[in-house]
Amino acid sequence: MILVTGGAGFIGANFILDWLAGNDEPVLNVDKLTYAGNPENLAALPGDPRYAFALCDIGDRRGIDALLSRHRPRAIVNFAAESHVDRSIHAPGDFIQTNVVGTFNLLESVRVYFSAMGPGEKAAFRFLHVSTDEVYGSLDKGEPAFAETRGYAPNSPYSASKAASDHLARACFHTYGIPVLTTNCSNNYGPRQFPEKLIPLMIVNALAGKNLPVYGDGQQIRDWLYVSDHCAAVRRVLEAGRPGETYNIGGWNEWANLDIVHAVCGLLDEMKPRPDGLSYRGQIVHVADRPGHDRRYAVDARKIESELGWRPAETFSTGLEKTVRWYLDHPEWAARVQSGAYRDWIEKNYGARNE
Ligand code: NAD
Ligand code: DAU
Image (cartoon, rainbow, N blue to C red):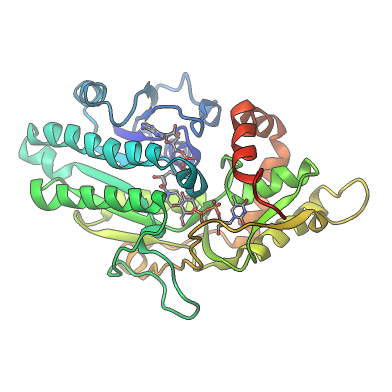
């Protein structure tokens, strides 16, 4: 069996659903269920004998030790993290606690678990640490995309905390011989993404008749990858990646934020026209920029393609349409996650940003 941390979040939930759709190997989902962890993402699974859930913090040594000795996973995929850059600007301590201290404690538990294995089990074991392209910092226009050899230069508390966790994972390979794999992926989008991130926020705000808040001039560039493509890449790295290596994952798909927001509005105009017949584009407003906002990310994904044969399958136009369709088809999901705590966050992040 495999142990997945953070499996109630956006990517982790998609990963578990895709894994069990193509595979009978059981999954144990270990999640603390923060505001971003939503058991409803996996509502189809309770009762499935291949799936188990444990409510546990990755930083809880005793809890993780007990789960490892009870379930004896042959691999661990670590998705658990605080993941939102804007929240890391308002409250960086949570990011240090989970992404740095939590990952460290998880690795300590894994070190003890690994050291007691026989040689065959050790050779087969994998710890796959899921990370981000943001650890590499920001690119100027025309600069080559991030390759695995690029130096780390994180610029936000979020990316700094992820960078620290990558270094801790790397050290476990070099110092203790634990077969660690690290993946650094670009911006994901798709079903079940919490509406604090750009694409789902724009969809839910547009449908609610609210402003579509674009930070600064909206010309910041991100590389976008459909979530199932990221999940397929993680499966492939788990299966065939070389221990100690890092693999960049990206969509070869750079977009300026403002163009993304226009694309979302264009889809909504076709799929769910506004009652007044006007375009959702009229709801776009430019608001104060994110402090320290990275200007551009781009991922050079040639290593995973040439070594492991992975390439994205989804195009941006089909992926974005599927995503908008999913939110249109799941209004209750979106309504439920926009709870009191969500409204407090929206007020904290957007209340003080003047148009
Ligand atoms: P998310 O915020 O949607 O989900 C995070 C999950 O981790 C939640 O279920 C939450 O409850 C759980 N969690 C948080 N702290 C925990 C703790 N201390 N112990 C156990 N569980 C905990 O995040 P996501 O967007 O699904 O991202 C998953 C991973 O992928 C993160 O490591 C993130 O850095 C990385 N990543 C995300 C993207 C992206 O675009 N979303 C891109 C590249 C990499
Ligand atoms: O690059 C990978 C990273 O992508 C992941 O590691 C992070 O977990 C994930 O959150 C994401 O980070 P970003 O900061 O790029 O994603 P976000 O959706 O928050 O913002 C995307 C861009 O849109 C960014 O340039 C900021 C901008 N933005 C975002 C929001 C929420 C806006 O203009 N307005 C907004 O309201």
